[in-house]
Image (cartoon, rainbow, N blue to C red; front, side, top):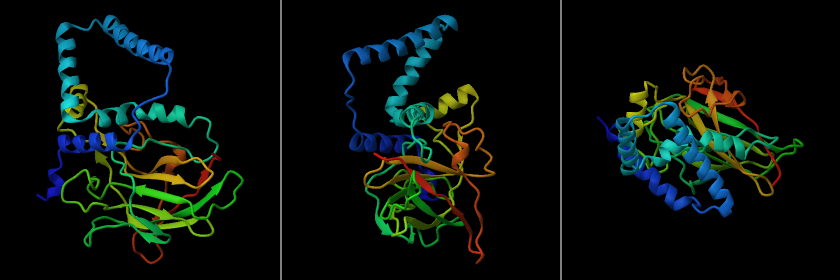
Length: 281
């Protein structure tokens, strides 16, 4: 068994928690009234569920133990990103006219290596999977090209593991920031990612098992697209025919974000085009 397959929920959770603390703003400028409103509604929803569903003390104590374990496993980023972030993303992007957004997820790492287009993402010499040419154009709402726009991309490998969150993978494996050319076009050579299960050996996995849910996410590319004077968009692109496009555990799939790759003319893998449209800042 390679080191990659020895990834654990606890280790991945600890990494995700550490990354969140390093890279995310954790203070909101909400007023006291806003905090009171949100906290009161959340507490009320919990209490309403307890009363309506006749929650027992045994169930209550099991919940307390599970909540404690989520923290000890470092899985709060995973839990929130899988089951809550899609609603926050919906609110954040409801007024956008351009490309649809999707969740960032817990495995983003900033400051990936930068490359001019056309580019090939860092990968191992024996990287497994199907080669994928991912290309397209970046424009504004008027269809005008955005030269020098940034395409930040990261995704799992052919076994469903992310670099920096599983042992044995090179630091920037299948991660990079590609700069579009003078016509706003980008061209990225990578490997098509695989569907994967979120970690199931920790507290989130215990919830999934107890509820009889599945733990699968469809294969996807993570992206952040940006250009000066325009709103950054965080999104994910999925693949037509994936068995979990219709039942993603993270509820993040949107019809507009599904790719349909075709075989390359040279027989070396697959290719697909996708154009991004950015809203003004």
